[in-house]
Length: 103
Image 1 (spheres, helix red, strand yellow):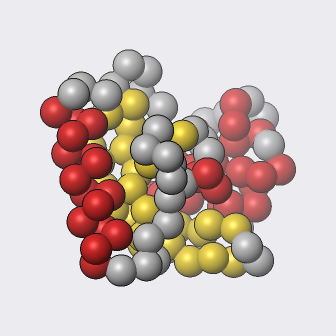
Image 2: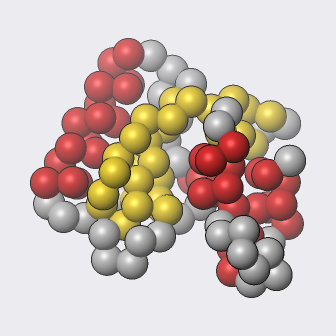
């Protein structure tokens, strides 16, 4: 399973492509694909958004579903989903949802 991650060009926030084609800030709202055709669709959407200067660094990432929640396989992506590690008491990383994604 994969989803498309990027950073929004306007503010640098980590975003994921949602099922309706919008860029969402919560990884649990991302569009998950299960096959090569789905991956091609996500990659094409990422290229179009990159060309339109909406996002930077689009990347297909590997994920697992753990207890119905999206869990990126790479620690880097789990950190991006939870938010900056510098102030864990502030921002989206302070939410219970983000804490669960890091574990």
